Every structure is written in structure tokens, then in C-alpha cells.
Amino acid sequence: MSPAEPLQRRIVRRATPEAALAGLPDDLHPVLRRVYAARQVSAAQLEPSLAQLIPVGELAGARPAAARLVRAWERRERVLILGDFDTDGATATALCVSCLRAFGFADVVYLVPNRIEFGYGLSPAIADQAVKLSPDLIVTVDNGISSIDGVRRARQHGIDVLVTDHHLPGLALPDAVCIVNPNLADEPFPSKCLAGVGVAFYVMAALGRALAERGHYDAGKARTVVAGALDLVALGTVADLVPLDYNNRIFVAEGLARMRAGRTRPGIRALFDSAGRKLKDAQASDLGFSVAPRLNAAGRLRDMKLGIDCLLATDAGQARSMAAQLDRLNIERRELQARMEAEAKEHVAAAQASVSGESADTYCLFDDAWHEGVVGLVASRVKDQVRRPVIAFANADAPGMLKGSARSVDGIHIRDVIDRVAARHPELVPNFGGHAMAAGLSLRAADLPRFRAAFESEVAQYARLLAEPDVIWTDGGLTADEMQLPLAEELRRAGPWGQGFPEPLFENTLEIVDWKLLQARHLKLRVSHPGDARIVDAIAFNQPELPELGEGACLRLVYRLDVNEFRSRRTGQLIVEHLVVD
Image (cartoon, rainbow, N blue to C red; front, side, top):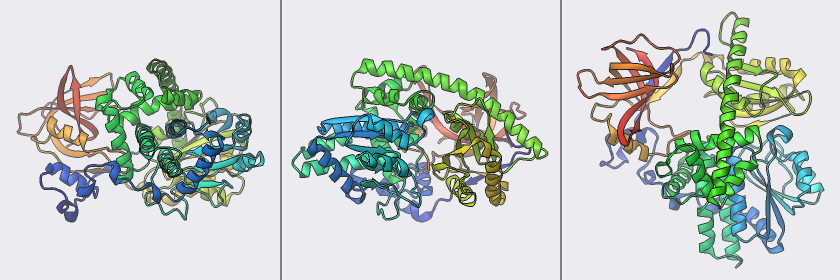
């Protein structure tokens, strides 16, 4: 699915500022010193702890939100948590429900829109569904900032709405009793990178403090309740791919530490077990690539209620049963995704053929048989392969409508691009929202050709950027001594790594000792530094085209140094991200 003439990838070593190096301890491993310095990590940030978290009081919107929730506690009101159908929304929903119940709220329920039937957020249709549950207060989590009509509908029914969200606000805001969002123009909170579950955490922390101040709850117990939800915060933060600034790294590090210590809820333990991952060795990558996809499968193919109930389960047996159901859904999702990706490959080839084999600046793909819940995954995979912004569309539940999921590349803010299309072509895009790298939108099916042309016209402004080679940023090379298990284990402990705080990549020219192909697509290598007898295992997953290889040949590898466990034996292993015959 690559462009007809693939762009060369340029390998660039990260700068290591001398001032940043000087601020780090001398006894730190030399490789870690340069890795941290390249990411501007200070000595004070080497051991993330809750004591260094941005104080709850600095999220200004959390104070009035807590005051409204205290009133709900005092009046014994029914509180409805209105969630979202991805892992961030599921963890935020489970966090609020569990904390409110622990705080002694009289009546707490939740509702999550079915992706296919209702779409995203507090729409008027979902507000009507909420009315049937007779809430006094609706609290949105991971949604609501664009729900102007839905909030209005709820208010017409006499229901207060408290919005907690992290998505970028539009020009108009919903008429909620309170809005908590770090990205509001007048919000002084210093971190704009909170996930929806991070915002929910701050609101619950502010509520615990407010309840204690009113004498309704013990302050120490309140802190324990909120801290007990850090496993959920870590999972939702990693899954939503928000940048791991220092505040978010604290969230993830603390949540992972609790998981490794066995202090996590039965649902997360069961999800680790169903994925074949060891909880005692939990890494951020386990959350992103093993646990989150199982939860997301429920929201994509069925209903996220199953995922939320798994996270809320207090009985280990029930949690295992729900995790098993989620595992089966994830298998179904993978099979569906594989079929759709094969079809997407044909659509890309057809688009390239229409422009004489050249790569287009962007791709708007649609197939009548595609599943709405999986188009985001397809768009992401195609984007990675063509290295262009991609939107994949499927038929929506409403006749004559399409739902699209967009994914972008560095340097092109996809939500802003869609916003400019909507501004230049009024009524062309009825609904849209998202971030720099991902967005969702709805469209009338008859308008797809017009939208495709308008979208391509906007992206064409980035032609020079798209013509440049992709850059692979590395942290330099490793010596034969460094390319071993001790450093691999140190790098594991040095995270959490993730979006905006990338796991270290290294580069070396290494000699091939031998190689073989596994499952017809994974390249298994044994390599060494030229002239050095020590041999290191390496693997390049999903290697579509094999270079000409022979014993004694040299490869320039860009790789991660990781721990390989096989039959109780632990060794260092190179996970190859890019290779070139030297």
C-alpha cells in the first residue's frame, strides 16, 4: 500500500543539549543520560511521584464542578455519567461511577451511546434516552464540549449538565452549569494534554476535598478512593495517545506501579490474563497494545457497556467472564479489520492509478461494506503505509449519511484542516471534532465527491512538507557492551514511554551472522558488531520486502533494545523498526 515511488526515510540523531546533560546525575547510565537529555528531562523528573502532580486546585473548572456535585450529594440526587465508547471514555466512566459510589452518593448510573445508533457525545437523541433514566444531573466524561444541542435538550427537560472533556472547544460552548476542560481559553491549568480520564480524576479529587471540607467524608479516605483509580487513569491516558508530558507520565507511572504490585481492580487483572500479559511486569505498551484493544472492541462492534462493566466488576469470576467476551470480540475485530485493510489497499491502488501511479497528497476512502466502528483503525494503518493524511468512511446508521475517521501525519493538524473545509463550504460537514492527529466527522453520502475535492485542496497546501523524506529520530548507537540485557532492563524501568515521550530508538551498522523468515513475514536475525564475537538476536516484524541478505553482509538497523523472555531465559533483543542494506 506504499506510494508508487516510496519516499526515502532519513535517519537523524536527536540533539543532546549540554545544559540538559549537565543537570542530570553523573551516576546515571551514560545511555540514559543522553536519552533523558534529548527529551529535556530534569533531575527532578527522574522519579515520577504523586507529590509532583500538578495540584488539584490549579484546574479552575474543577472547583465549581465539585460544588455542584456536593449539592447532588446533599440532595441525594440521581447522577448520570455520560461516557464515550473508547477506552478513555470507558475508564473515565468507570472512575467517576466508582468514586461517586465510594463517596456515598445515593444514586449513580451511567449511559454510553452506541457508536452505530447514536454516534458520539451528548446528542439530542442521547439526551432523550437519558431522560428515561430520570437523572437530576448529567456529568459528561471525555465528551460534551461540542454538545451544544444535546445540552440544550437536557436543560429543556430540567436536567443540569456538567461537562468534563479534554477535546478542543469550538467557537461556541454548551450551556452547561459548569465546564471542566484544560483547553478552554480562560483555563490556567498548565498541562493541556490531559486525557478525558485525567480530567475526571481531577474532578473527583476536587470533589473528595470539597466533601471533606463540608464534613461529609473523611479527607484521608477521600484521597485513598481517588488514588485507587490511578490504574484507570494510566490505562485511559496511554490508550488515548495524548502526549506524555511530565504530569501524564506521573499518572502512567503511578498506575503501572500499582498494577505491578497487584493493587488493581479485577477487570484490569482479567484483561491482562486474557491478553497473555504478566501484570507484575506491566508496561505502558501492554496497556496500549493488549488491554485497550480488547476494551475498544466492545465499543467498535457492540456496546461499550461490556467494557465498563468489566472495569467496574468487584468479583474476579465475573471479571474473567467479561474479559473472555471482550477477547472474542477483539478476535472478531481483527478479522474484520484485516478484510477492510485489504479492500483499502485496492482503493489506494485505484486512486494512484487515476493520477498515473503517483502518490496523492491525501486519500478519502469509502466502501459500502465497511464497518463504521473499524474505519478509524483502517485509516490509521493506511496513513502509516502511505504516509499521507487519510480519511476512511463507512455508511452511518442514518440513511444517506456517512461516518468518517481521519488520521494525519506530523505537521498537518487534521481537525483544523476539516474546520477550514467546513468554513469554506457551509453545511458540507454537519459534524466534526478531534485533535491534531485524529478526527471524526459525518457527511451526507451524496456530498462525498465534493468533500473529497475540498479536502484534497486544503491538504495540497502542505505539498512541500509531504514531499520531504520521513525522519526517523534516533538516540545514536550502542556499543557491543551496551547492547545487552542490563541496559534493556534499565530502559524498561526508565519510562513510561509513549506519545510525545518516545521510547529510545538506536542505530548501528551490524553484521549478519544468520537469518530466517518466520510465518512468511517476520525477519529473524542474529547480528554482531563487526569484529566482535558477541551475537545479539534481532527481529523485524511485518517486513514486507526482504533486502538481499547474505552471511557477512551488513545492515544499518534502527531498533529498540528490549527484553526477550523465552522459556524462563531473559536476554536483550533488538526490535527493528527500519533497516537498510549498508
